[in-house]
Structure formats: C-alpha cells, structure tokens
Length: 163
Image (tube, rainbow, N blue to C red; front, side, top):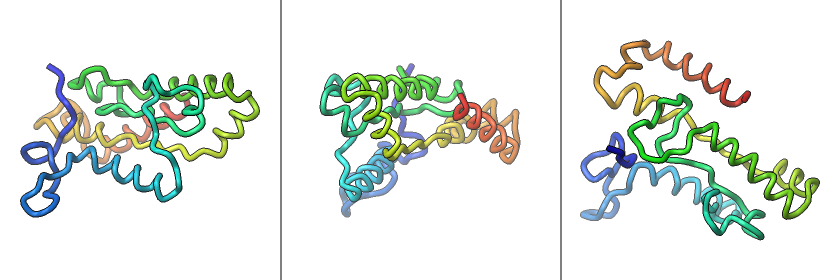
C-alpha cells in the first residue's frame, strides 16, 4: 500500500511544535517553505507544478516545479510511494518544458531565458532515509557500509546528471 512521505517525524509527521500548544510542521514542508522564502526574497513568483493545467501561456515564463515526493537518485528509492515521478522523467519534463517555452516565445528567447534561470536540484536525501536508515537491516545497509554507500550514491548521481 502506498503512503505519503512523512518519514523520520514524530507522530503526525511533524518535526517540531509551532506556537506553544500549536501544531507542528510536516518535515517535507520545511524544505518548500525555505524554497518559497528564498524565491520571494529574489522576487520570483511561486512555481507551479509542471503537470498543472495552468502551466501554459504566460505561466511558462515564470517558473516550474518538477519535483516528486519520495524520489531519489536510485530507481528503487520511493517504491513505497504511489505515482512518483522518477528523476529521469523529471529531467525529461524539464526538456519538454523548454520545447513548450520555445514554441511560445521562440527558440532564441527560450534559450536566453533558461540560460539565465536559477535551477535548483535537491536529490539524494530519500536514498539515505528510505533506502538506508528507515528500515532496520535494509537491503542497502546490509549491502554497504555508510561510507561506501555515499560513494555509490555519488557515482549514481553523476550518471543521472550526465544522461
């Protein structure tokens, strides 16, 4: 059965208490809050999900979010989650978005816009949490000592980026 990504959090999937007696914040939300605040500081509009039906026309000129909860560098990361978009597909979606942008503003303008964009890739945390630490005696922790696993993940990440 699929489940959402609230790993490593106390009951309710929270990392800490907000205001005294108030609810905590989902751990994965902390990352998105940081990204949102950084974007706001830079004057950027909030990114729409790439698969949003609103990701067309003028919205192609703002930003896009290609992320998928639970994904990792390794293809077996996130198997416990439902309908995740693997990193290879996310990178393909990024290429497709550039083609859609070029169709909207022209190839030269699209190339210029993308070349001056900030691209943020956060990847690898789920490979450690879900594949190595979360399950006692996980297959990866039995296969690798942590320092060897780090080297393995880095070598796989290089392959992803080179593809």
